[in-house]
Length: 172
Image 1: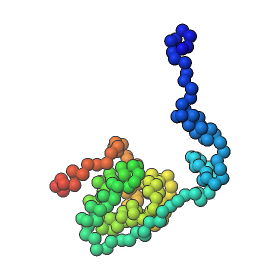
Image 2: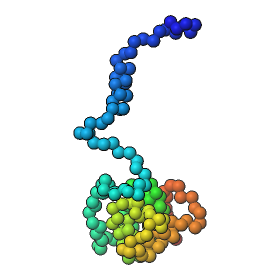
Image 3: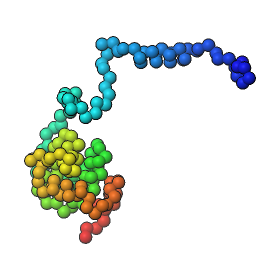
Image 4: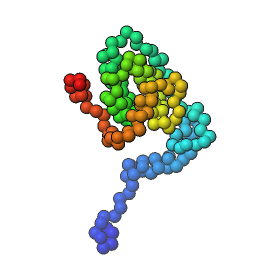
């Protein structure tokens, strides 16, 4: 018992405590050269060679000339909503809601190419927000529409994707 506190004396270390002690020592020990080095966040190092980036090649984009316009619009709406990164899910789904039904077949093909050909969604986001220059192949009237939409001149709150009920409302 500890003096004055009526607490039991500290028991000898048990097995879990001994193992924890061993694992702490192992974390401080140098890594054997046979194990891969751990990666951490490097930040925006100017000497970054980007050789460690892994980019999975995607099949090349192909235009679908026989696709009916309603099917194309439905597919592009779905692809605008399911991007893999929240920023583009919000941006493209709201853009699609506002613009897909009024786009010509040529514009739909340009939009299809824009959202499906680049292998990195961040590129699309950077082009739309004008953080990076748009490659010439994607510089067209649809990209101009997307950049204008991205500026959000009406200061709308764009915090979530649109509900799909608007698809079932009668056209006006």
